[in-house]
Length: 211
Picture 1 (tube, one colour):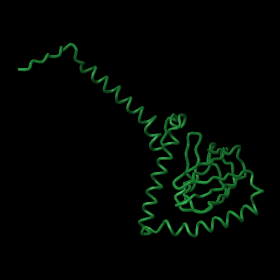
Picture 2: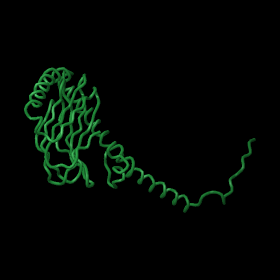
Picture 3: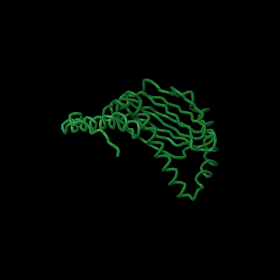
Picture 4: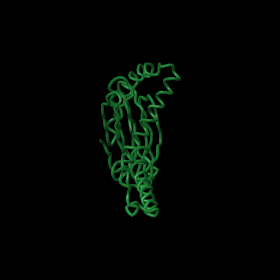
């Protein structure tokens, strides 16, 4: 027969100690959820800590990637799997034509220009530091293909998405800052080859933030 030692009742935690430990664990879990999980996984940052340590930006990128993947899946189903070939043929030719014409006619008038080549699946961001109500004129073009983009802003504890597009060869307009902060573009190459994105901007901004 196996004889085990019975625990001393005095060594066991009391009901009050168990309740206290449970409350402490619950509070710790809530703190971790609010300061780490929500910012890093969903881009939700109610305390501002996530933005300070870079977790909020990570979460925003994850959410955007998930949205892009789901939209790509739905679009592919809608077009019976032909979504990849059709935009690439016309988009590449159109973007090269527009880019060449734009470089010849309006390039000297812009305050800043930024150009980057994205490999398939690669994404990158460029933002302008703007005050609330400030306006910046922009023009960007994707050469040799098309890209997905998100024109958005963050700052002063706020986030906003102005415009999104899929399989786009270029865009232009006026960006009006909804609040003081960083406002600009996130591009991702969903094409099958390298795509060069060139951005031209001018207007009321203090700085262009690049990777």
